[in-house]
Length: 274
Image 1 (cartoon, rainbow, N blue to C red):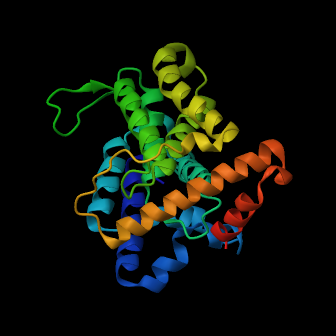
Image 2 (cartoon, one colour):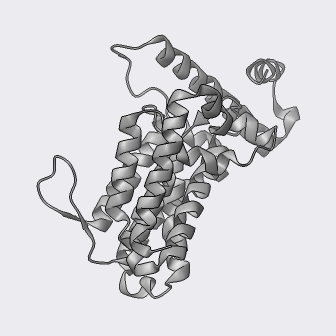
């Protein structure tokens, strides 16, 4: 595959598949990321196929414009390595989402965001002089500054579960993309040390805390006023609250054993996991 066309070909395939999904809900539901289908039915293709589906034209356009903007990375690393970074980041992002939402069999997600984040963070690690221009910011900012801002927003989004956004896939994809770039070019650690450390350290520390203490994800409500809240918003908020309760009880079981639960806690866990 010609290096200059690799990004364009990915974009064309993604647009075609997403358009099919817009018009065929059966197709959409068969290939979207869904925890229950992956863990219970072993339908692992969804870990990749979901990256070619999108929820709207705006969602699709944002991801594809971002991918096109950073496709120049292929000139530096070559077509094969570019594709490895792209698909490994897609898989890594979805695996992190799977881990974070493993107790919620109904959790569903779509989009190429994890893969695109992997490409962006790989480009930041590859080019120490990379600068980015962002909407509403009139001047270019260093790539590592953008990465730090992105990670901060993403971690906040994961903890607060703010918006209908797959923050976990973003973080997982970004981290995997950067790690694979470093595996291909270890010398990047020498000439781009500070930006790489500054962008990777918060992600690794956050994931370590999540793995050791799942309740770390529970932050409670950030606001008591929810203007314009819809039935879907209320349903999702209730689902997140229930999931937080499950995680807290599971953490207690993990640290002290099932017998440490009170009869009331056992009953509550049974109701929450039905």
